[in-house]
Image (cartoon, rainbow, N blue to C red; front, side, top):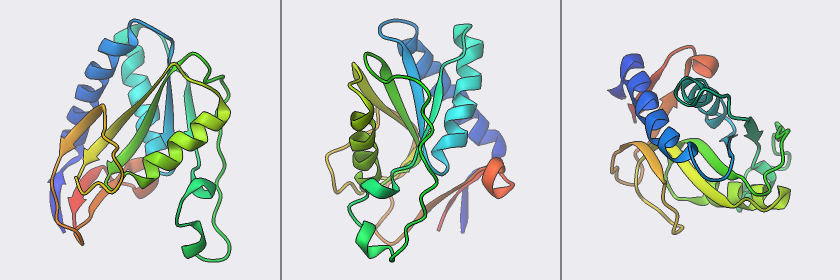
Length: 173
């Protein structure tokens, strides 16, 4: 495994993402952050903390479980692990920013978009990811990416976060 980004570098990437998100969130419809389970959730919470410093207000943060919206659900075994969605705010007439760790094929984001649209009709739907690794199967792109790294099929990007893995780092496998 090759270390792409260490803890300090990950913090800098999140600071940069927060700066870019704050520029858009300061005007227009109210902004809400929705982390895609699993690692998108702590990333959304970290971004909300950084955005609070920049904007002077706390943005609502929700958690989205896309398990039942996946197009490969039947291939993943007989009993999918559903962790639940926790969004305690209306998404109607808001700017929903989906947050995820890695953008690869676009299938996860597609499922997340469908799930959010079942909750309401946002004015804008945006995507922020820590890593855009290329290799799209669906025509989906991030509005904000912390880093872009083209990798051949078969190679993976692994994001590890303290809240889940005990360490902050981005690895290529």
